[in-house]
Length: 585
Image 1 (cartoon, one colour):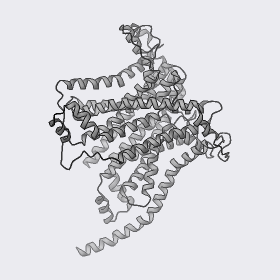
Image 2 (cartoon, rainbow, N blue to C red; image 1 turned 135 degrees about the vertical axis):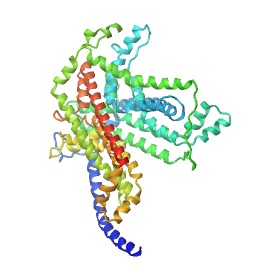
Image 3 (cartoon, helix red, strand yellow; image 1 turned 30 degrees about the vertical axis):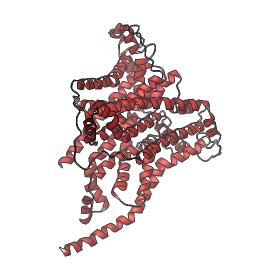
Image 4 (cartoon, rainbow, N blue to C red; image 1 turned 60 degrees about the vertical axis):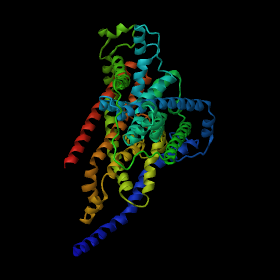
């Protein structure tokens, strides 16, 4: 036994030596790559805001320092109005999202409502709906003159009219489509909360309703706060919904104002960079506030003993809560889809009365034919798929390297890697697009105007999501499995290939699936980086919408949604098959 151990130890020490020598090179390579993806574009964004140079005309070399644009932005009343509108729209949407998300998490986790699996799945559907598609659909439903809801209300004799081209429309759509962020945080917290705390409250004489608001919700306050701030941050960086519902009513928010600056002739790139920095700073403050508040308080709710989250018996009211879930699904999924179908197949959207909706002579494939007669349609679909694949492969590989380094090693510098990889969480997609515009438009080499710059922007944009998705898989793998491989003489790369990667394969596939879906539906980062040859589906949909043809917009929205649904189904099946194969092998 002693001889065997003595023989093993030198082999282990010998194998560890190259790992120690390679560690600084590996960390340095990751830091350089992250600096290339994140730090360099942000520095160029600051350069654009604090200079009077035009990247298109002057190229990369010219630099005329000037704080004029940044000062003008801070004093511009239009920027103040856009900032105020953004705070109101996102703040109101966040409040509504908290109400909906919290209600659904409580129904699913803490009650005996029937079909809770169906409710949980339904509550997550809005996450996969592109924001611009949601905005277009609700514009069709709630247009003050031709909206389908107003037509139906008029037919029923109800003196009520909707107008989603308004601030209230923005708030409603934001709230119902970003409630899943709150649901994810609060549902997890409710599952991990000891039910004895609520039982003690009820034994003391408090009603179930009183216990809910005096014990349950206060104990999961960190989760509520985290979900609220995340929802607010995501809404703040969204372009599609304000473009579809705010622009017709002249309601400008920061994202739409930035795009307007670059759409003017000549484009105001410097001013756009300054406003983008303002948006990024606000987002970063909110992310910092979230971390600060959560780290400064203790809300321990998990005891040392095992427990099972109890299900509150609602009696007959359980069908009421189930009805709420069905209504939510109808409002978020069925109504918008129905609106898109009607607008896509009707020759003209003008509907004089409710009965005209059922006149089949008014329906045809005209708009779909027009969409597919456009050569940009198939080009955009092909470009979108290519960018999605590149983003998934490159982003997945990078996230694996970062996640392994941060979670499975003790090398010096891994905290800096973690910090740089997490930094984009505070950068809205639109800001990433502006930053990459400044970083690459004036450089030689031809990266700007290719699909690669879109893919790199997406990789940087969604890096925190991908690394977080992979971290859980790494933390579930015990360290002794790698140590056993090293003792047997495996190199570090051999251990990763034969031990870590097979065990983490479900998480890797899930993270790459997430990247693929996010890349396909991303609009904000694409707005400043595409050309006529690299148009993607999200950008072409925006072009159709801004062209004023509602029928073609609705038709292409259905095409994009159908493609996204098919790809999501395929990737979900692939992820499930990978998980099962890993489990049985």
